[in-house]
Image (cartoon, rainbow, N blue to C red; front, side, top):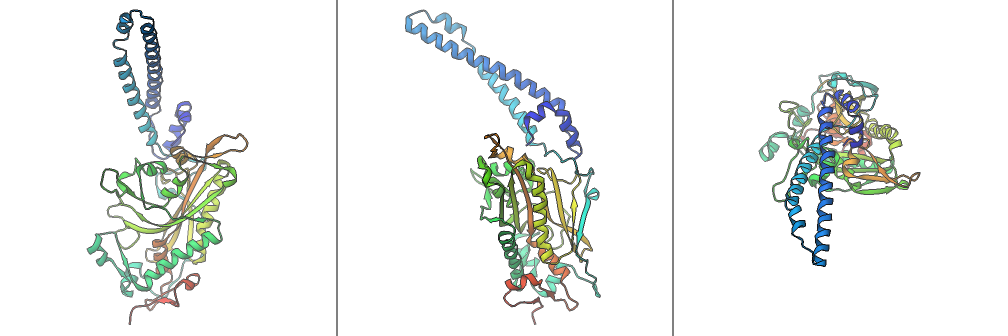
Length: 427
């Protein structure tokens, strides 16, 4: 959430920044509502004071035996007027909050301007794109020919956008997750965390998925519904909700492996083949909680931590800075890591690393105590995939495929594979 004080004092500047995203913020309408709120606040407080004063005067009159009828007559309609004023104030406050919750984060100045991903700017590349002496297959054909990837079984169980993995392929998927957790905890200084997969609405409100992206979430039924997490970012970041961290606790780096659940609303017809876009997938998520002055250095560090995984797996990738029209709702600046997929002959996103500045922290009231002032201040939160296991599996299958249809196992994963050095069709 954007600072209300900034919205009131610099509404036009906010509107100009958000316009770079293609988001229209009607500054005049917001300020008009804010003026109504101030007027109603004054009126309501005046009526409350009048009610309290009248109650005291009536009490005194009764205690001294004076006639209270004139006093009662004077405040006959005071309760109704106060109720009406409070109702109008609540309505205006709700209208303001609805606007504020619908505003995305302010963009960092160096985010390139553009309407869509075509304007994203490449920062660097790593690794060599493989040069096959045969026609490479995509992960779907590879998985089917290996007999280890079954979309028909998944469809019978759950419908489209699900997959069943079997045998060594399932083990490779598990090995990837274990490898990533080991690297991030033993080398990159992250605290491994186990978190709930079901969360309440307030948690999603805190990280910015609600109210704007409710249609992309799976929700349980019942008097107190839960939501299935779309990413471990939600529970990890909310661990600091309504908390104050001491300066010596920062920076805090958290990592968790969880399944992720997304309805993929709005993606009809996109990536319907294979495992690129699923309703259920696994991810190792990284979250940083830092002092505001450190957050852009932390973004570089977070991105480097995710890159380390791709480098250890020897998967060619590139890093791009997302343009203004492609940056996520809660982010001020985002780097995407895009891995090369021979089956599609292009780079595809495998991790997004974002600095959300104080946007999420303000929603969650996640704070730290600044030792220079002794006062609680809002944290800065960052998150990134470190990395998406399903897409990493796809990248390994396609980049490590051999002419005989087998798939070699990356060297760093061999210790996790129990002697399996390649995926081969069952004989």
